[in-house]
Length: 219
Ligand SMILES: *[C@@H]1O[C@H](CO)[C@@H](O)[C@H](O)[C@H]1NC(C)=O
Ligand SMILES: [Ca+2]
Image (cartoon, rainbow, N blue to C red; front, side, top):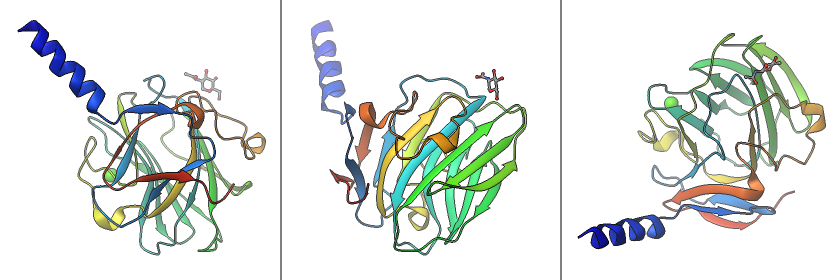
């Protein structure tokens, strides 16, 4: 009986699609609008955050609102959320509070987004395509919870679920990195591959639904 249980456990672990891979030069494609396609990112270390930096690159031609990066804990919605409300209007949430950063963006260009946040001052600093969009303050003194579901492709309204097809991402995402400290963003440039929590070159993830991995189209 014990052997059977061990066998079932073994199968359920190894038939799942959790994997770690070097995604250098690759992108996740979310090829169709859905409420079922997403990538769940698993951090190298699970820890609560007083400071963090998130960088990623994305391409989409969506004109409706969409989620880029959704980090929920069991008890908190929008613990970290990067959401586009309108073209060029980036909503950056920490602890379900929001700071809005506006940028002139072209629908046809990929974006390189970097944002950092430090609890001590509450300052969030947002960079788009290598240029600063200024600093705003939110959730001074707050600690972001560590036990998280981190999801690309969908916006969570619960822990790992309650997706809304009209907030889903359609397009491509690559070079996602998350650090547990404030990285000087003028130094990030193109090398946003090596976060100590999420590392694109040693990415632990699970894809669900219609998500395709391909060599990236843009650098
Ligand atoms: C967060 O960053 C500040 C400096 O901005 C530093 O003093 C503090 O120790 C950091 N906290 C943690 C938990 O890393
Ligand atoms: Ca949400």
